Length: 409
Image (cartoon, rainbow, N blue to C red; front, side, top):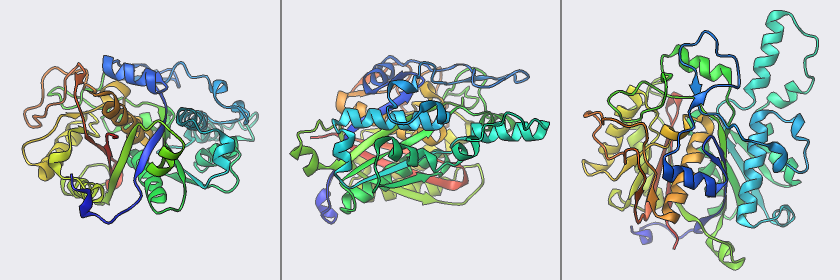
């Protein structure tokens, strides 16, 4: 890894982690579940699934928004916003930064999502279609705007001079948000970036993937010969980014370093991934991070468990790495596909793997597809001394984002 080959820039580190997932809330519980290979799959309870032959998902079942939302009335917030505000609060607490301290510094909030508050849109549409207008919550139109995700984090923290950005680049959005925050910190535009992704379980997305024939019958099996598709999921994950100098000056705990990222939009197909576009994104991330393929010890793949995605993604990885691939895993086997939160949740998993010295498993695995043939660390976590982790996130429309993280020190 030759960092002298790139122009000098501020080093950016991760000092806070906030995570709410179907397998655990908080970095400690999340890390334990990753090590145990715990599955979040269960029958969906967020909406009526009668008539669907396949109705499992990965929901957050133990979430209490009142436990972390202090200033706003959590009852007036939509589910996705509750998850976002709570995740952001948890990340700041983990970083040891109080809201009043953050208000004294220049800061940025960036949130990735696919659906935002689609639950409120669904409710309004249903009532309009059935002619039942009475009782419609007047606040639903306010909650439905995706911009509320980042804006309400700012409101909760009473940040009046902050840039609050919501990025809707579908399933790559969490990584886009991390890249946006990374740029703002390295450039000196802000001192602290609070960035991540969020998604709530919504019927619209479930039905869309069901109609595409990509919902798995029981569990998600990435890279397996018998894989049948995804499970929709929900959750939120946030990272606090700041410069290394800032973190050292305040004596912060440093979880990991953000080395760089890459983006691409191949515009190949509305839903099918493009090998060349994904490979281009990986190469850009390596160049931005100042690493070579041989430096990468772990790939957290997008790994949806659909036949097309897994084959195409691994072919793109081989295009950059050749045939000698590092362990390539998918945490979606445990978390389901959390759409706009997926990249951020996987980024937190990478940070924990780097810091605690283990590789998360790909669970539900029986037999690796010979067309893929990767070491997916089947079913059981593996102890490992990792230096660099690559986190892939691929989205419909050809939006790709890859974040590269390094162990610190």
